[in-house]
Length: 262
Image (cartoon, rainbow, N blue to C red; front, top):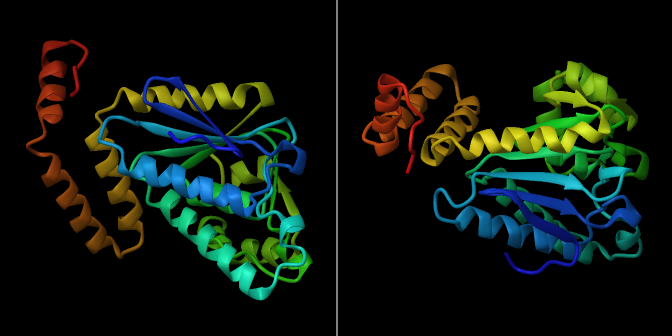
């Protein structure tokens, strides 16, 4: 991985990439430079050979915030042209993150606002600290979410509930995020990252090609009607039919041993 100024990238487990947003003094707000780094990071992850990276875990530095979205202090005084140029970079990293072929998890260790909340909606699944807060405060600043919040949030929590929070800019708590399906688990602050890494380790032991294919089928199947989704699933299963890992998995089950996936 290239060197970064605003991202701390480590490999705490084999094939597991841990990425910390490293701007704790500004609650891990994303400035233009950090947006470029996220684009570079996910461009490299997406191009990595199958099996080299099994999972990406995103979290924030410090104890206060996961990520509070775009850096408004940097945007203060930007011309419309400068803001639009920044949006191009942000949209590129958003798309690269969404199209990541391996699972991307969020360990939400604090505030997740604006683009930070949208990041959670865009990735595969998240665990949150019990003190975490979520929200879309853009409306209070004269604009609106622009990285999928108005589209993904209603699809998860329902139109009426989404309108309440998107149009008022009010926050909601971790317990609500869990009840509404925004996050998968709520844990104590000290448990969130270890729990994410434990799940990431499980993913690292699964056959990479099968995980990638299943992720793709789930995501794109949900964008279509059920009949089209079933066709996508059938094509995914057909693609894996001749996989050596499928044959090894079945043989290991019959022989009552741990599979040796390639």
